[in-house]
Image (cartoon, rainbow, N blue to C red; front, top):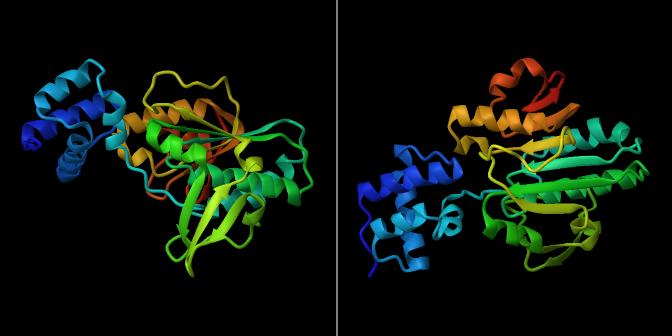
Length: 276
């Protein structure tokens, strides 16, 4: 028998997930908080929430708590215009350089986005006959989704998630048809070897990167889970690791906020860094 969840428990969970992970869950998310606490109580066999929260404050079950409260909606080649912009505007000239080309995926979730980025890079290298070294760093706070991403094995409903026709996906994934609309996609080694998955909290004071190293940063559909003032800080820290002339991609409902004077806008939430 699991304990009843009351408003005090919901408020305590709201306060702790903000303190631990920076995730902001306003009152209109109370039912979400309740559902996630309920799921957590079954997984961890919680008998008493006040005891659980006390343990959490001392670090017990911290990662399980974080994993329970993250949202992981993602698809392959979601918001495909960003991948086409990368393919058509950035990569043709940049892959003629010998300088390594590095991309950051800030909030990798279960891995569909970073694998889409990596496949685009490898496809562009073939098309443009490039020997430039390419790599993708993918970060997320949720250890469970990072493990899913490292395995790189997906079942796709092509009705719900239509795949692009401009890229030869079979070169980067072993594809098995399971039914008329369902396929299995297993990332090949050539794709996996240019990807690195790391745990990182976007609200951390320090980021695990040196200087201005990234040519592109994808930070899409993740800022919406933070307070505006925290979004500002996250964007500022990410921006500090983007090269001058580099591109930042944001999600369709996200804003560049206080960095507006330091970027050129290309539309569709594509921003080019023009000033520090």
